[in-house]
Amino acid sequence: MDILSIGSSGLTIKPLGIGTWQWGDNLFWTYGKDYDASSVEQAFKTALESGVNFFDTAEIYGLGKSETLLGQFMQQTNQPVYIATKYFPLPWRFGKSAVADALTASLKRLQRNTVELYQVHQPFDFFMGQPTLMEALADEVQRGRIKAIGVSNYSADQMRQAHELLAKRGVPLAVNQMQYSLLARQIEHNGVMAAAKELGITILAYSPLAQGLLTGKYTPENYQDPTGARKLDPRFSRGGVEKLAPVIMLLKQIGEKYDRTPAQVSLNWLIAQGNVVPIPGAKNGSQAQQNAGALGWSLTQEEIDRIDQATRPHQQRFL
Image 1 (cartoon, rainbow, N blue to C red):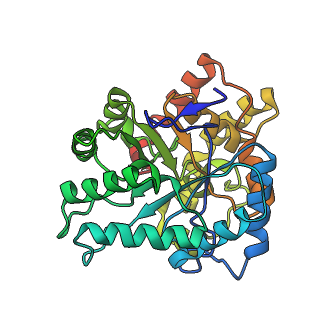
Image 2 (cartoon, helix red, strand yellow):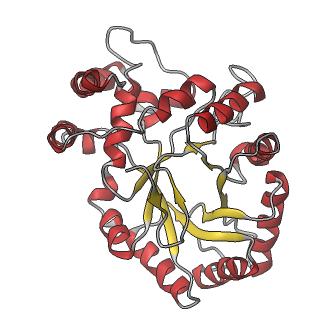
Image 3 (cartoon, rainbow, N blue to C red):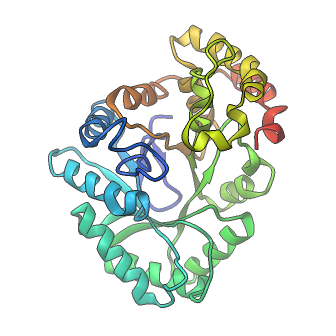
């Protein structure tokens, strides 16, 4: 599938994007220590050269630094670039003006007058409430400052409510951004995927490589104690890596047929689900190029089914 429509918004992109949480963030990531602005700029340029021009960011990524970097990089290219960013419903944001002000700040950092996709980062209500929030977002579509509306981490019921509220204004809900990978397939069973397909909503899949577990980098043979946030994730323990080994072996075997890596096979499997756009991170040019290798080819149905069966036992174990 070369081109995918984002919901019913009219926006069409290749079914792969780049997540930019790592860009400028030194709270959860090691920006400024292990990589820097020049590294992520190379990721941006390489992604465009590889045909990937959809980037997902948020106002809270690096406290605005991710948006600022993207804004700077976009000034240096004439190629079309599609941006998705996010509004975080903080407790003290309780009126329509809060949405307008947050969007204004994001657009300033991005050096843009409009953004292709504006998403609600979490389904928090606090004092504003979903009706007011969706009204404010619909107002911005009418003003022309955002082209499509999305949500993130919304349950099936929450997504249906947002869809219904926006429909009253004649505005479609374009996406729901959810954690989705071969090792995190909850949305297939909690109603989110079914509701998204029913309502014509695209799933943006964040952490599609399970923070690197599906790249083949972590194996029992080269095991090292995890660092950073991965220390808190039991999937990165020696036992977790050992349990995952048969899945990685299968991804390698299938990938050899296409001269592709386990990560590329994993991303291609997600794309094959039909209304899914994976947005793996990339903090340098090599990672951006690796991600792009998920495009331009397709797994057979038999291979899709084999991967499906192999990862089903891990759905609960690796949550």
